[in-house]
Amino acid sequence: IAEAKVSVLDRGFMFGDGVYEVLPAFGDRIFALDRHMARLERSLSALGIDNPLARAEWHDVLSRVLENYGATGKSVYIQVTRGVAARDHVLRSDVVPTVFVMCTEQRKSEPKPVVAITREDIRWQRCDIKVTSLLANVMLRQEAEDAGAFETILVRDGHLTEGAASNVFVVQDGTVKTPPYSEHLLPGVTRDIVVELLVQASIACEVSPITREELHAADEVWLTSSTRDILLVSKLDDRMIGSGGGGQMWSKASGLYLAYKHDQLSIEAQ
Ligand code: PDD
Image 1 (cartoon, protein in one colour):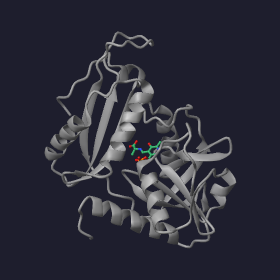
Image 2 (cartoon, protein in one colour):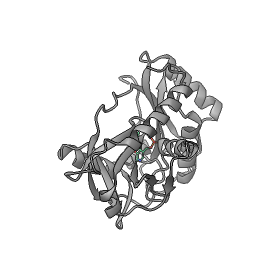
Image 3 (cartoon, rainbow, N blue to C red):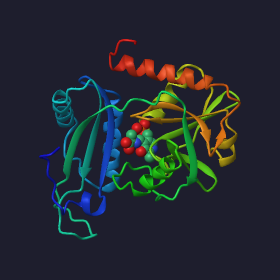
Image 4 (cartoon, helix red, strand yellow):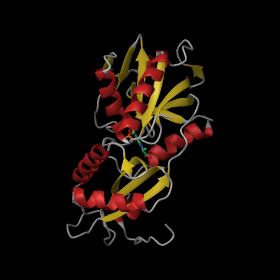
């Protein structure tokens, strides 16, 4: 990290003109690698940045980064920016993308249910692309931090979109629900896997719009992300969620998800 250098004219620095991925890893294995690579390709193509590496080359870079990083539980961060060019809003075709990959130690997952707040979703209309320009997300997430909460859950035009750095699920009367994809939320790798596992386990799961009122009246609220798995929210805007059932459905979903993740990563049950 101390030796890595990037030009001050890199468009990632100048304009936030780049995309990224965060992949959970254990030892030399990456969880859901293909899904993350597919999303990276989709983000790059949405911005018209040529993918600088073929899949096999990506795999090689990732293996080398994992090999050189000691900890077992870790996250890999990939960033691709459009590259270095004289500062100009207008895009040039002869720019070479900048690639940055690093490993960090996996944060300890939150042992207890977390507290969240809701805010208006003030972000742009392409939240489906995983771009590095995250200023609105940073400001919204900071509002949670300042309120002593863990996450800010976003509402646009009266409907739940996602968290500042997570996707959101609610449980109502035994049915698990999460909002459908649109330009207002990120297609989450964890969210997709959770939906698939619930369907496989014949647990009622609906992908449909969720109003602010439904969010506040939910029996359970969960947050999903690659770095946090599935977190249960106990309190939203200073009100307890549900009837204090202790997140029975969350417990099931979390069990299914962690069993699947550990199986994919060949981690022995602890
Ligand atoms: N963020 N929505 C947003 C806005 C996010 O930033 C993230 C994850 C997610 C969850 O996506 P996934 O399950 O694919 O990690 C949803 C990463 C972890 C981050 O920015 O660090």
